[in-house]
Length: 206
Image 1 (cartoon, rainbow, N blue to C red):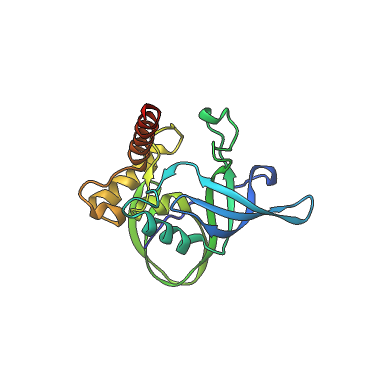
Image 2: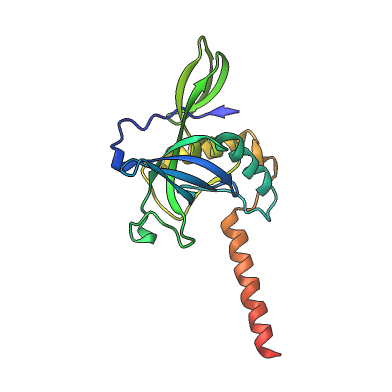
């Protein structure tokens, strides 16, 4: 697996959410409990959606594999999330399905040994001589390991870095890129909507 070390730097408490993942729905969505520092209590069962990636739908090829990869990364773990408002949602970090849009960071111990990594737009490898804590970007790890596309609907500050990671995964045929022509989920959903409209139209004619 390729890690994506990525420290977002100092974050004010009101800019981030500390959560514990309860369930992974698919390759870009999960359910978590959120720590509320003022109440000193957990807000339970909040759905989240990773803001800048798009994983295969569960009905698509590689959908279950993408979910399982994300589950291996974050299942049962504590994450720090940065809510992301988009122009399409009026700047509010909530999508049409009532999920909070976010970037996700995981901080955990990296064991000594050889590691592959993607950092600042480049992939490399090196030897970790002693265990240490590392903060990692979950979106980038999904992309560079080949289990998600960069979302193409929105421009964002780090899109060049994200697309470089996607190109690297594609060139090296990792994850879903073992397929010669993997089908992006937005095309899959567009076809589904078209079929539903056709079915509704036929129903009205009967």
